Amino acid sequence: MPLPVRMTCLYRNCDFLAAAAVPHEISDMNKLNRMIAAGVVAGVAAVLAMPPAQAAPEVSHFKLANGLEVVVIPDRRAPVVTHMMWYKVGAADEPPGKSGIAHFLEHLMFKGTAKNPSGRFSQVVATIGGQENAFTSSDYTGYYQRVTKDKLKEMMEFEADRMTGLVLTDEVVLPERNVVLEEQNSRVANNPGAKLGEEVQAALYLNHPYGRPIIGWRPEIEKLNRADALAFYKQYYTPNNAVLVIAGDVGVDEVKKLAEETYGKVPRVAEVPERVRPQEPEQRAVRTVTLADPRVAQPNLQRSYLVPSSTTAKPGQSEALEILAQILGGGNNSRMYRKLVVENPVAISVGAWYQGMALDDTRFGVYGTPQQNVTLQQLDAAIDQVLADVAANGVTDDELETARTKLIADVVYAQDSQATLARWYGSALTSGATVEEVTTWPDRVAKVTADDVRNAARTWLDKKRSVTGFLVKETTPQEKRS
Image 1 (tube, helix red, strand yellow):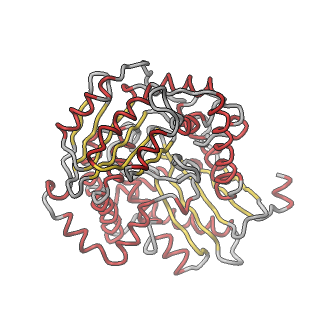
Image 2 (cartoon, rainbow, N blue to C red; image 1 turned 30 degrees about the vertical axis):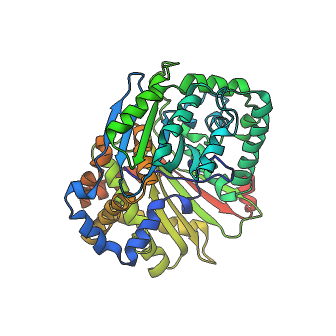
Image 3 (tube, rainbow, N blue to C red; image 1 turned 90 degrees about the vertical axis):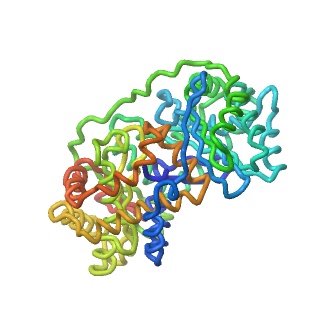
């Protein structure tokens, strides 16, 4: 399972996952790849040679009587724990006309309960020297704290209290809506690349709600109110629609005891229906969108393809797409970089990514910034040539082995971070995967063949399944008429 993609908000307690992300920010994995390229591969190989018990923590998984799923990831190196509560609801679950309500409710969850008034939870976390935040994606919403082990039960009590005890008034809801509007303004409206990302994603998804931005469409955000937030809260915030992930200096028995004493007392307040969303029809037309903005200093191209996710793919397809993305655009040694930046310098930068962790069909992307005196159309054609070559002739054994090593290394290095592990398991379980599928992902990646990668390129990198976005300073007269 790939690590989740993230884009951090400017405001405290908000961290919405990028659905229309600027491609250059799309993957934490690329940072890892650059580190590997700098000479860490030998260390990775040594770790991969370890027996499983040494290489990975023993992850436990159980369920409380009220339906709450619990995952425990032991890490005994320091008396610290990461406590995360995940809800199986995100922007793609919002009712029509209420885009942004999942993210808005994430903000409002910090406004207090009858037992713990607004600000008390955060004040306690700050006083004990802990960390906290929250995040929203298309498929889930999450809240976390990182504290010393002796404060775990207190965090569980706070989180259990606000699971069903949130108190909202117009006096807190309306000012917070203004905060979200300012966030949308700063992160999207004033960011030409993010605006283009929204347009590309909206054009790619003809029917599925992944086509709307996680933060919401501004005209709909402006109308969100207390009643909307409470209705959404009461429908989805219930223990039988949540996953608790705890990583750190704990064992499964002590976590189970604490969970029973805190979360076990929270009643099921709603029966959440199966997540069945509108699906995409056959995509039959090549689509291009052009966004002009006078603030654009450097034109660029971003393209998204509609492809299977780790949940919707047949066995081996998602892993092949992961490797394909690494080979095409996973760093300075990638196929696109060598061909388009080094050998035939038509681009300043290029890359590729695959957002594999999703409940429904997801996106595979390529992007690039042209050299001076190279048009976006010329760069677009050059990228097409590289993709066509992979689809026709496949990849080399060296490319395949390097990509597999990088992806598996990501798993190895993730074990050095409690928060990364907790986020990994939480995002997977709220996106249709299981604990076993997360733990066995490196084994599946290791089995991908060169033929699998070539078939992935042939099958899914069909331009009729894509939308290409051009970001320019100004449009030509012909584009304005179009």
